Image 1 (cartoon, one colour):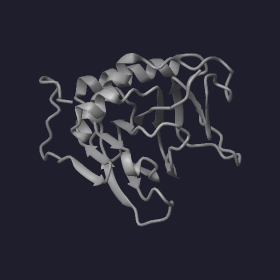
Image 2 (image 1 turned 60 degrees about the vertical axis):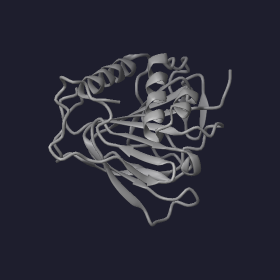
Image 3 (image 1 turned 60 degrees about the horizontal axis):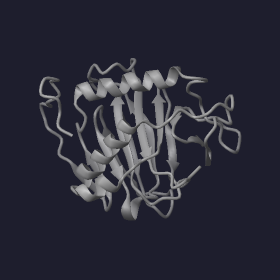
Length: 228
């Protein structure tokens, strides 16, 4: 996605797009500042609806340090529901069509394949908020029944994104810095790759996109393969 011509999103030292592994593509600065601000504003509105964001509880009883709002399907480790079963039981917020279109553009651009983008219709979004020492351990996104790629959009404070193997969570790992506006897509042979966010990088300069001090927002788009 081209930056908005008047948003001042040009970097002094451009970061090239990279193929981190087969099916894993990092596109720095994919979102212009206006698009980032619009997404942050949308995320704030979603968090105000119903019971709002929550820190999910893992099966062993531990609570995640990341706060999450779900769209389309409500993610509960490790399943999906149409209702917010671990909150007040209300219906999950709908997945907006414009967000599905954004995901399709992301896949088409990352893979340089318009057909792949046209075929990509996500119906799940996890909007994750990281603050302070929040982090995400190494895991797979495997609750989905469809093999379509995962689209990740970063907003606000930078982070270290760690990617490993689709077969195990042990190293060796590859670490990449994700900054505000960056796009990451993983799919194909690495659709089930283990990945995580070991730390935030609050010392990095952050564009004024509407996030709070030291806050990172991440929108993760997926195709559930579920019906009903």
